[in-house]
Length: 287
Length: 287
Image (cartoon, rainbow over all chains, first blue to last red; front, side, top):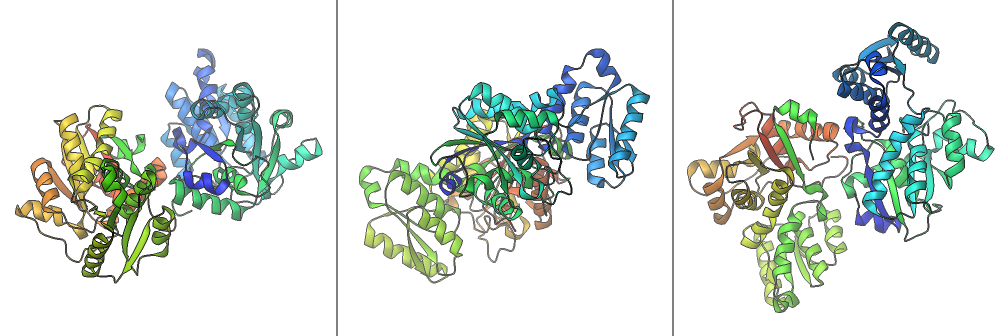
């Protein structure tokens, strides 16, 4: 998708990859389906498992449903009913636990032991990263040569896949990750040269709260030009622009990339052709 | 665009034509550009004129700008600043008048006399109707054979063009117009067999307040299977579904067509392949 008004405002030619129109409303389906489709028949028969209450849980449930295999999703008992209903709607089994990381991990371990299913991490997995990278692959194939590509950074799975795909298909493109200022562990980690986990994130970008893993940190360190951080007010303003000018509805996490190219300190030169990955659109209409 | 959830809810296969992504954010650009591109060089040099404060004004201004010819838009002095700014942004000249129909018409007549420009009516014009019909043409070409096509009905330009295009490309398709209950002049006119103008419309569908003309009434009478009317509450619920489930942002007028297929009295049989024209997306983010 393109929008002349946003091109004018940013001084660049913007090409949006619209993952809000992807299955389950977010790029997460790409990685999950890559894992599920790649399982051997034996592995597939035993099913898959994850602990998540977000888009990854829905994506894994849906991918499992499409292959006709079981999925167990460990969710805290405090998860919103709408998220439970979505996962159940895709035919997965919800295993409820206390809302602590320890409870999630011990509950998942028990499910794995009981069922023989395979644990599928939301981003610390090469197969997931490869799947997420297909968004950038399609974007570059559709938009033609790009001078830069931006994606939001949470756990780093999308940005890692974007790096790998773009390095192959647009080797000279400047790769820029974007984080909310209130969850800037990737920026701090890259500046320090070592992984610094995110503690107590504070941002409206609820898809970007998690920390990098050693795996995604290494990929970002090797390929990114830079990480930009954007304030929540900038994210909200960018989200409204996407809606009113481009008629594109996204979740706050997705609007970070437009907020970044509208900042005066964006390192991408004016006039350049810029790809922006809008990661998803799962937000309530009133949000 | 398609959406499996909305297919399930409606019991039909729905194919959405997304005119919110059209230039100026609405189908109106199709008719306006058809008129402007078809002008002789002589006519073009004298420019175009209309009285409107809505999407047609922006569409005509933009079409004139693309051909590099003058456009005069007569607008009431009460028109919102955002609409004035949009028209001026496309390089048109705004002529302000009192907010009455009489003032609009006499002001437009004066502009026409002064400039020698051509008046372009928003819907009572065969060239406009032909242009609007290209939305249905593209929809049918993209979606394949359709059993039914729905479009909103205001002045009837979009529905008239839809009828003509669909009769040629999908001759057996059931053609259904949709109106808000608070501006149902087309339903009443077709029932009475004669044109009954809309007086004091009362609906949130601000693109559907106007009356049919004899021209559009005749086309609808000859081709429509039926007109459905939907209540504003149904429109709002359908608009939220489009946003949350299909991630599609539309103005209220556009959501009428989804509201119609979700009604129990929709005459289109279950399982049928249905084309729905979403007419535009020009609404504030807070609306």
